[in-house]
Length: 304
Ligand SMILES: C[S@@+](CC[C@H](N)C(=O)[O-])C[C@H]1O[C@@H](n2cnc3c(N)ncnc32)[C@H](O)[C@@H]1O
Image 1 (cartoon, rainbow, N blue to C red):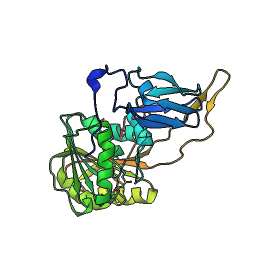
Image 2: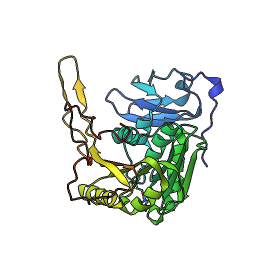
Image 3: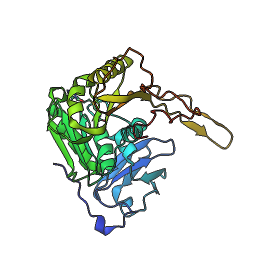
Image 4: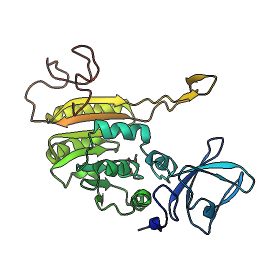
């Protein structure tokens, strides 16, 4: 287990200390992620900065390279870290992490099953949301990813006592019961639906992150056919950054067009009645807008 040296006592929380992570950003927005160690220096084409020049400085300080270039020194946010950390697998980035936490209704104290662990990005967000009183159990089928993910997680959260990682194929079943939430980032989540129906608490939330529409369709079919799930909905999060300068305000020319779809369902009592393709009045199948036409009135939020 890799532990970062921590001498937090030497500096207040708002100053960099030995062992901290720092995100250095140059005037052109290039980002450099470093771990502070008094005897090391940071080298870039803009010049050298001894780490000792950063240790003891306030977070947000402007430090200068030996050749006079300015670098902004910040502590990385979770979103920054996910972008910069080594990742042997595809990871879930900030725009989807935020939506997963809200649509999955991940609350402090929740017991959450996640699969697969991958590089640990989603695990970090889940751990932060469940807090010290909650638990995250993460299944990963490929052992070679586990140590790398653990290293990423422990960089920001050195002793995650409430995380249990299991080398296990989630398609083969779920060991736990009484789960508040199940969050999946695996390619064939429909195999998990029968076990999820048994493992979730009544009203528990099932959430799956998937890249393609064919997978979504397959999953929704399995959820519907299990008859234990309802309020299924699939959303996509599109984030359009804007360029704001003194003279112009416009959307940036490029944006991330697609990452994945988030499908959510609630674990409910067994449904009697028609199948997926047979119309049944009163059964909510997604975020249709009814009433006064206010989005969110009908099934937009699983908690709502
Ligand atoms: C896209 S990655 C997950 C990335 C992760 N959510 C993150 O943000 O870092 C998918 C992971 O699921 C794992 N996986 C695939 N099928 C699985 C299964 N049946 N059971 C457990 N893990 C599985 C893969 O080995 C891979 O590590």
